[in-house]
Length: 396
Image 1 (tube, helix red, strand yellow):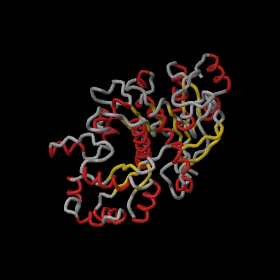
Image 2 (tube, rainbow, N blue to C red):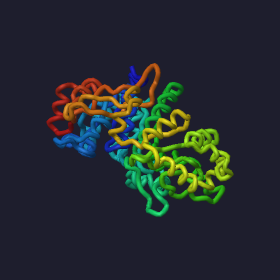
Image 3 (cartoon, one colour):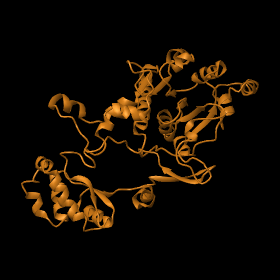
Image 4 (cartoon, rainbow, N blue to C red):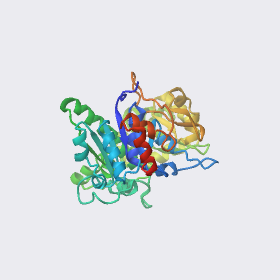
C-alpha cells in the first residue's frame, strides 16, 4: 500500500503543471480521478512525440495511475456534479486562471462550505494574488521571470531554455508537497486550506543565493555555459571517443584525488589551484588542463578511473544510455508497463523511494472517460438514471 492510500484526489487541471501534481500523488497511492472535457480530453493526449501509428507517448506517463472521467465544467449540470464530488474528496487540483473556478461557482469558499476539510491545490503562472494574477502564465514566461532563463546558456549567446517544461513540473511538485503539508495540518485543525503554487515562485525557489548576491554584493549572476563560475573543476569534458564526461572535483580533498588519478599530483599544490578560491580565479586554465587529459582517454575509461579514485564523474546520458545502464536496471529506475495503445513502454519509476511504503506504477494513462460512470456512482452516489441524463445532455 502506498503512503497516500485512502486519499481521494480530483484533478481538474490540464496540460502539465496540474497533471504532474496529480501524477506525483497517484504514484504514492492516492486515488486520483482526472476530469477531462467530453469528446476531446486533456490536450496532453495529443502533445509530444508519437509512435509509428500516431499514438502519443507522453500521455501514458503523466496520466499514469489515474482514473479518467469526462465532465463539462462549463455547464450548470457539470458544476453540480463537481459539488457532489467535492463532498467526498480530500484534495482538488486545478490550474485554471484565477477567478475561473469562482465564475463556475466552484471556488474554495463555496466548496469548503460543502467539505470543510477540503484541500485545494491551485497552480497558476503568477499565483492567486498580485497585479499579474490574471495574466496567462506558461512555464516559458515564468521561467524567465523567475530568473532561470537569464542564467541558462553561454555568455556570448542569448538565453536558452531547458529542453523540458521544468517550470511546470516544479510548480506541480510544489503543489503536491503543499497538499501533503495541508493534509498533515488538517490532522490538527480538522480544516482544509488553499495551496497556492505559482510557477514563477517555484522557479525562484531553486535559484539558490541569486537574489541576496545582488542585494549584498552587487553581483548579477550571468550565463556560464556548462559550468558555474568560481566552482572548479566542475564541467563537461571532451573524450577521445567523441563523448563527454562530467567531473565534479571542486572540494580540496576531491581535487587532490583527481590530480593523482590524472597522474599529475603536483597540480594539487600548485598555487593557482591549491584551494577553492584560487581554482575559481583560474578556472579557464584548469578546465583546459583537465580537457587535455580527458581527450587522451575514452569516456568509459575516465568514469571507471574516477570511480576508483573516489572522484564524482559520469557520462552525459541520453535515453538510450539510461535504458542500458546497469545501475538504473538494478534499482529499477526505469520500469516497463503495458499500454493499451503502445504495447510495452518504458518510463521513469516513482521517486523518491520509501523503504516501507514505496510508490508504485499500477497502470499507464487511461482511455478518455474510461471510469466516468463508476466514479459518478461510487463517489457522487448518482443514480443510473441521473447518469444517463447527463450523457444525453452531453455533460459527460
